[in-house]
Image 1 (cartoon, rainbow, N blue to C red):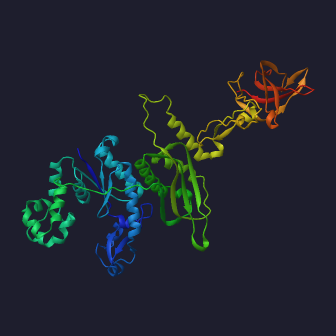
Image 2 (image 1 turned 180 degrees about the horizontal axis):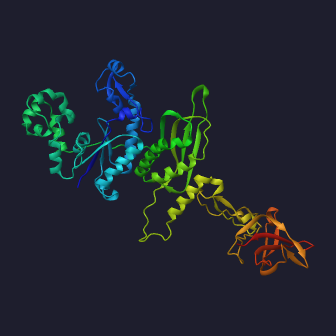
Image 3 (image 1 turned 180 degrees about the vertical axis):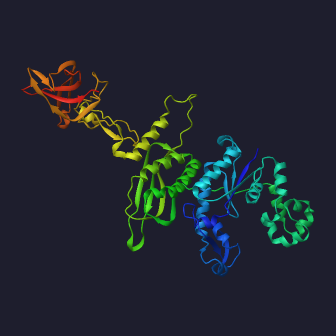
Length: 499
């Protein structure tokens, strides 16, 4: 079953000036000195489409007029199309602020046509735009239903589509508009009336394009489109309508950019592991260097809810040095999108992806320096073999200090330890007292494990000659201690504590 979704953005010229995060008010967009579109508040003041600028100023002086900006309008239109790529790669920009999506192959992936239409609407709402959405077995039919004023804008069968189209005003079909007076003069009101007219006479009095558009709408003629092409790299920018002084207030605008990035990622079958949000401040003579907010992920992701949640945590910890006037977003590190899991049952206690998301959330909230994971180094000396790195960093193979040894040094790559290692290794060993020939730490210590001899590091000037023991105090606490060899006097050190 063929299915198309048509998206019509009726307030696009207005919402490029007055995004949804701004306070509502009487606004209108003027094109060639005539009102093109206005807000409800402006309409209540008496402003109408086609009214001259002077008439608006005289009737409603409180209405804020904006000159139409085609470049900004096209950029907003492109952002919507980029976002919708996450639902299908076959997305086309067409006339009159409309977008067509061939979702035939996407229905099962998104839970059917109703769920997919709801997803499309939510994505456009997240960008701050108002949309009318239609669905039909033909692209021209979806376009017409999206532009219709009726609430019944979806049709699955061709018979249903024909009934819906026949009830629409014929002016919705763009090729008929130059012949409006002619068609009204012969009693034509709807597309159904238009279809009843003799084809040869209709073509002779109007044009071939009228019949071609009717045939495309009813599935009697082929439909060809130029699908939009995604750029090789994702870089997006958004000018803010007002200066913003608090970082948390930037989240709504930043979400618009993230939703666009998700559409690009899905179209490219990629996931992002690092992206940068650039906060731009004053320009010109009073220019302030932009603030870069870098987000690193433990595992590549492409879901907007997760990315927005990480960004929210980071923005909550930032103090702005100057007001923000624009945002920029770029995906700096990418990875192939991971295929779905092949396991039949869910992981008990959560999946590895859930663990990675928790680490990413903690890193965004606490900072990369406060969320660490073990990064062992291949060296027998415990103080050198024990390392830590940021949990959000990609896990690299353990560094091998032995690789840099001189030719005559032994390749003593560590193997499984002979004795258990303590949970807590001290940064610097503590020298212990010796009483009655026994090491003392709060109480005399008794040896319950060992010895384990470590003799390593002569090649780099850090020779360690030690015999390690597991010792226990009178309170049953266990310690990792060593006796240093090569000295005339026996000397003991505390190097670790067992949990």
